[in-house]
Image (tube, rainbow over all chains, first blue to last red; front, side, top):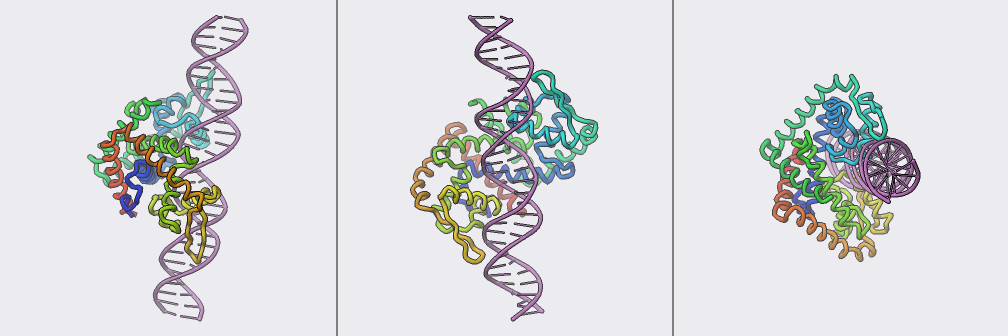
Length: 144
Length: 144
DNA sequence: CAACTTTATTTGTATATACAAATATGATAA
DNA sequence: TTATCATATTTGTATATACAAATAAAGTTG
C-alpha cells in the first residue's frame, strides 16, 4: 500500500514515523555485519573517535536522553566493546581494543547504508531531505 | 544543541529518527487530553470511522505490523474503547459507545496537533515535507 | 562552613514496536 | 476428499526508548 492511500497520510505524525521506521529497517540491515543496532553502532563510532567522551555529550550528539545512553552503553559494555570509568560525578567511556579493531568495518557499514538509501531515494533528494529535517528539528530544540 | 553540531548529522538515519522523536513528543502532548498515545488515538479514529474494520487493514493503513496492531487493540480493549469479534479467520473491531462519545475530542486533539506543528514549522514547509516523506516512504514499500 | 542548588549519571518502570513462531481458518489442487 | 498452501491473527519474546525518581558530586551563597 502507498502512504497516500491512508486517510491520515497528510498528518506529519504518520509520515515522519512511517518514514523513520523504513529508514531504521534499512539501517538495521546495513549494520547486521557488526551485530549492532544503528544507535549502538553510531554511538560506538563516536566513542572510538573521541575516547573518554562523557555520556552527557553522547546524549546531546545523538539527541537521545541520558537514561537511554546509559542503557546503550551497558549493552556495548556487555559486548566488551567499551569500558566506563567514574571519577566524581563525571563518567568517561572508552573503546576497548576489540572496538578499535571493529572500526573499519563500522565505517564500511555506515558507507553501505548511505549508498543504500541514496540508491533508493536519490542522492540529491535524500540530502535535501536531511537538511530540511535537521533545520526543522532545530526549530523544536530551541523551544526547550 | 543543534542537529548540525553533530558529526553524524548528515546521516539520514539520525535526522529522520531525531525528527520523528520530536514530532512524536509533540503529538503525545497533543493527545494527553484523551489519555492515549498518538498511535492509539489514530487507530481508534479509524475504528470509529470504519466500524468493524479488520486488524490487517489497520496494519496497512497505519503502516505497522499486524502484531503491533494486536497489541494496540488489546490496550484499547482494556480501556473499554473497542471490542473484537472473531468469526473464522477474520476479526472485526468495533468502537464502543464510550469511544463514539470521545470522537469529537479526538478530532479536536488531531486538529490542535496539526496547528501546533504548523505554528512551529510553518504550514507550507511542513506540508511540503509530508509530501516528500510520503513519496519516499512509498519508494521503500514497493520494494517489499 | 553549612545549606541549598545545579549538574551528571544511573535505576526503576513503562512504552511502542517488531520478529519469529504458533494457531486457526479458508482455498486449491491432486 | 484429503493434502497442501495461503491468509489473518495472536503469542512469546526482545528491543530501543523515555520519564520520573534516586544518587552523588560540585558549585554557590548566606
